Length: 423
Image 1 (spheres, one colour):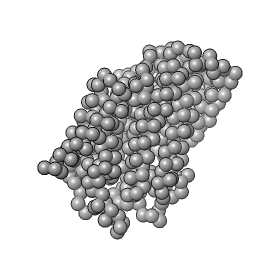
Image 2 (cartoon, rainbow, N blue to C red):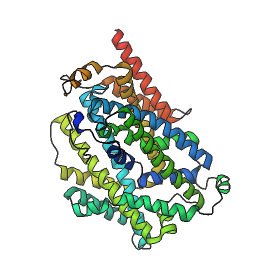
Image 3 (spheres, rainbow, N blue to C red):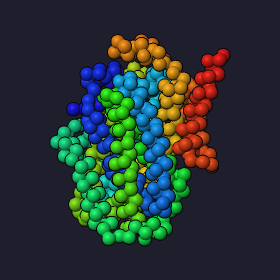
Image 4 (tube, one colour):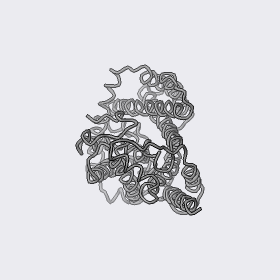
């Protein structure tokens, strides 16, 4: 069985590597959940059918390139993404800061998923309870589950992903049967229009966290061919099937609201599956976010925070985001992710494959199954380049934001490091 928490500060031995399917199923699960369906529904509601699928295609190409690059590095070195970042430009403290960024993004996802849970609750109760109260109750409820470890309910939530996939299949059959595709193609966007460049950035933003943590999984892979297969399978299932079906369903029903879609097509069972899905996804979001903050504080200050207290605080913050309406800023949230994370990945790829700053140390230590003895403390060049790349992605009025930030950060980092080496 694949255990992501194993070997947190060491290489995964060759004899502990697992089969292609073992890694692929876990990796594919990151892009076959409720959040991907939400993204597809937004694209279908706000873009023409052609532009929506072009956004998926272009976003998938970007996602595929960076995911395969990082995944291959993780497979070769046998280490997680956060550990790899130490010798890919960012250093020990820089890699900790990356962990903070990931934790904050997961906090945002917690707020969004909790809002979906709350909206489902208010709909089921026919608005007898306000959204704010529902979001507060559901957020506190889930925080208690994760903080104090009610494993029975966690186990129940684990059936959510396969149930959700079955529900999507059922809704697709019932909604799209007999529908003329040519008629859907001719439909204008029912929601506020989204440009193609913005759609591409949203697609990348919806999957980019999965890219960054891909080495956490592919360090268990045995070959580069397996990493390629894992990447392609995740794109096909997560982007083209789940996203694609969500686009068609949203176009047909004229809505991007997941709760409305589920209630119209599957009634109470659909809402129940949505609730289970939010439970399962937010269980992971809150757990990983809390763990990331605890590790970051310990890595920088040496002080170890209590996991339970940290989880409660982060859960309450995520609940507050739900109450304040983060779900209404879903597009903005995806856009932000789509320009903040690509620079980090770009710098890691440039350093590992082009500059090869610490490849000799990695290669030498790999021969004895260890990690390099010397670890850079902090990579200021990488941190500054990633910040500049994010700013360019957010502020530039030309091109595709996610590509702008990705390319700008990589080029700036490469130039700075070349200049420093020359001096």
